[in-house]
Each structure stands twice: as C-alpha cells, then as structure tokens.
Length: 151
Image (cartoon, rainbow, N blue to C red; front, side, top):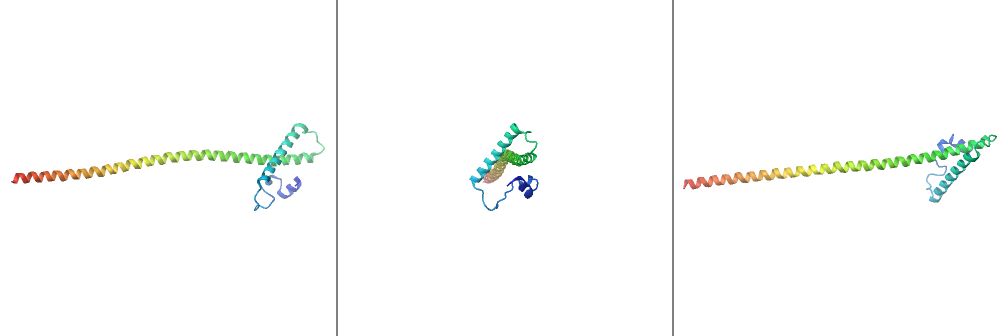
C-alpha cells in the first residue's frame, strides 16, 4: 500500500500505528510477525542510509522525500510506543515488587501482634484459674483449721 493510499484511508498516517488492515479475528502467525519486524528494520536502515548519504541530493523530487519522511514517522512512532510500553511494564514490575514487600512486612507484623495477644489471653486465663485454685485451697485450709479447733 503506498503512502497516498494510507493517508486517504487513515488520515495523516498517525492513526495507522497499531491498526491492522486485515480481519482482527485472524490470529497473527509468528512468521508474519517476524517478517513485519524485518520490514521495519529494513525501513529504518534505508532511512538512515538515505539521511546519511543522500539527504539534500534530490531537491527536485520532493514527493519522494515526503513519503520517506512519512514512513519514517510511522516507524519511529511504533518504536517509541514499544519503548514506552517496555518502560511502563518495567516500572509496574518494580512497583509490584515494592508493594509485595510492604504487604508481606505488614502481614508479618500483624501475625506477630495476634500471636502476642493470644499469649496474653492464655496467660490471663491461666492466672485466673490459678487464683481460683488458690482461693479454694485457702478456704479448705481455713475450714480444716476451724474443724480441728472445734474438736
């Protein structure tokens, strides 16, 4: 598809990035994806060679320059978009690791507090039980003392 066909179909070509002309229900073949990447690499190579060795040599054929620059913009836009997606994914991974660490630390602190409170409750119950047993023993000893005194 030539650039004038692309611009007539997608406007200035900026909307072309990320859109597929073929049916979306058909899955991309890995070989097709690899071929697309090779075409992009070839386009970048052609543009950098043109820019290095032939820039300014074809002032009489401005139309070709416009097409090459438009294709370069499309290709660079795709590259920038991919770079920004990679950056976002990496930053999300870092944030996720940080949040997992914070969650784990707070969870462990909460578990320690629950264990401490559970031990306190158990000790309180044990102290209450021992206090009751002591009180019973004191009553029994008082009663037995009275019994012996009465005899």
